[in-house]
Length: 80
Image 1: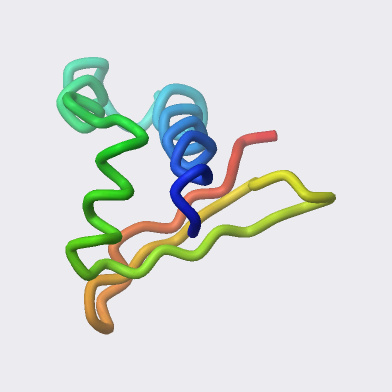
Image 2 (image 1 turned 90 degrees about the vertical axis):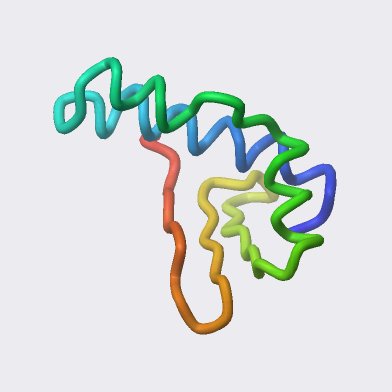
C-alpha cells in the first residue's frame, strides 16, 4: 500500500461495514467500529509496523488486507 491508496482503503472498509455487514451488526456496533477512522489512520498503522496489501482490478483498488506479524488483522473486498 502506498500513502495515496489509504483513501481507497478507507472507502472500501466503510462500504463493507455499511453495506455488506450492515445486517450482521447493529448500527451502534458499526459506528463504534468506524469511530475515529480516517485514511491517515491506515497510514499510521502501516508506519507502526502493520503490513497492508491492496488488490487492484483494471488499475482500481478493490480490496485490501493487513497483517501484524503473522496475524491477519483484516481482509475486505469492495461490495461491487
